[in-house]
Length: 136
Length: 380
Ligand SMILES: [Zn+2]
Image (cartoon, rainbow over the protein chains, first blue to last red):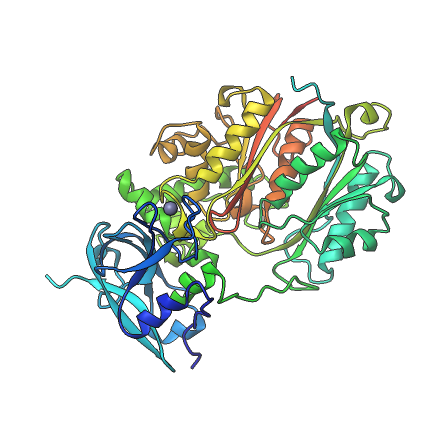
């Protein structure tokens, strides 16, 4: 079985993946403007400030958009149809994710549904942020 | 209006074969198209001093036998050819080149001499999109659509209407890869690729080529042309994010808005002046975004506009009149074929000809809601 994709961190994203390996979701923030931005860079793409830091995210957000993919990536083939989604985080950024813990049925995936972060272990020290519906 | 000399398209040709072409490489498909386009304007390879292509442009310029003084290898996906045309116009206006060839060849289906694309897991799109089992453009370019459908209270049939309307053109076009007449129900009954997208709402993958020859209107007047010259009246280009998840707003593409606005402004025209429209349709949501983002209809109104028949033969805004990328052909970087169809319509040479086309707007997208390029072409 093909292993699921492994992101290759760059120096400006290393912190994000290191924290994810500890099951924490952190986001880059512009110190000059006090705003969170996405994706991680060592400067702010809004104002150009090089003064950026990291803030821990609540891990909560809402389902913004999705597809139910019936034509899988080879590494996902054993899973059956799966959801590839965009989640709008409370802090503002929008992240791509799978939606775990839900039937891959559009009726179970209302836009605006509250979701929360979980971490998927892909082995060899890699954990990737994923989202699941918030338990009712 | 600008005071700059007019630039015109004097040659426009597709490769002899499009669709399934297992016996020709990408360079062969592109070179076949270039020679056909040059033959339309009485020019030869020796006259070409500018070359633009998504193929490795220095290699391809040499392959053609040219000695260029201007090269453009802009590669931003399927709309690259709109950008090539825009750049070629500026080059010709400023004397950097006299005769520019823009060439496309892609063996997307048969993979003969293909351009290798290796997923880059260190890029922003690699780290933050491909990690999640994106299997192809069909499973990520499409994602924003559910936000769009939700916002306007639309269902799956909004997408199916796009394919059904375009089949009214494709079913009259013998070169169309998918040439059947299709109803909304036919489309909805086709296999699901990535819900809400069915296979007939996703482009096929084909082989083919296309080429354009551009020069000044002044030079064109001295050429022996097989068809009337087509003027490049306006153009626009821009980019947004590296993938669908990085869009500023999931329900509208700034790339479409900005590039079309600039092209219309440069042409000194408004949408009301446009007789014919091509909107790059790798997937069925793109004509919906395009119609709204360019400003032909209001927000959320595009599918009803298409369902009304407005974009079909005899309608008020004929759109994707070759059948589009969804039905005509889609080699991977379809933009060249959208331009080819607009030129044919303006020359009065289309397979399914719209009467009296004097203006055409061509809206391209590159990558997944990443780059955008627009052209306004008119009769000279
Ligand atoms: Zn800032």
